[in-house]
Length: 379
Image 1 (cartoon, rainbow, N blue to C red):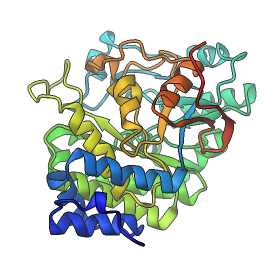
Image 2 (cartoon, helix red, strand yellow):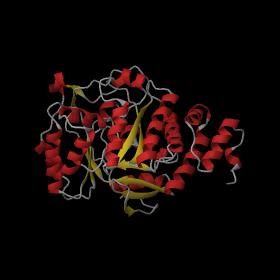
Image 3 (tube, rainbow, N blue to C red):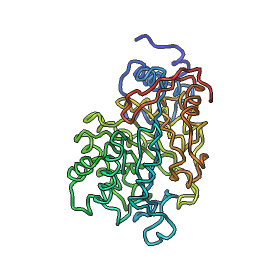
């Protein structure tokens, strides 16, 4: 492939080699990933990331119609970065929803064209695998076509250990009850030293990866995440993404990769400044370039704000998550710009079109439901 001179003006030898590889569709190494973080300017990263994104998805940017159920913010774990959970011993400060209360939230969407319910929350000792299996069966009996994406690997590890189930047994049990796919939460940073410092009491990196690989082997897709912008280094980000990339090489089971920005309000890491929007965009772009076997990179707009998410569409991002409908508190409690995270379908479509992308409504597995013209205006 003939290289573009615009990508090689005044580039260092290392960046020139990386640019050549990206243009040819070749995989870059962990060291080259770190070089991009440390040496590449935002313009180069945007061009390379857009090249990869367009190669995979053309000019399309995706969203879905979804809502969240957060069963509880009571948790047995004490992650230092978390502004959301309340320790089990202080659970009067939190909330605990019953099966009927959660089911009522599902029924509230009976006449709306949502395609996915996302169920995640704290790790509560009384909300065990059988409790959630009952909820899943109830939802599926009521609305069989609603895709249930639920439970982080951290929640699952705790539930399965308590029930004395292997990961395969537990995932098979929940799949039979109605669980369709897994979200990507709980990955944080896989580096063991960092993990020990910020969330040392929950499942290990190896356990997180094993749960997701097992889900893939059982025919269940999942998402992958990385918490960035706290005490981790660029090398540790690259290592984290490489571990995900290796699993994806084996299974092709990850739907999308979602970088999640550390927010510092009301948590034990509040003394650490949040990274800039420039760093956000750099991270999205490097992720898109490095994660060559992931079809999609998602900007979770309730966490970074709708405006930054829109700009990220020019830095390798091709997915904006969904309508949410003000049904999540995880990031608003941590200081996100989006204190009431809800966007109508028309607003999401206009946001995507405003970035010069073609809006595509998808289901959870990225099957197209509807394509919108780029000239859409707010209703």
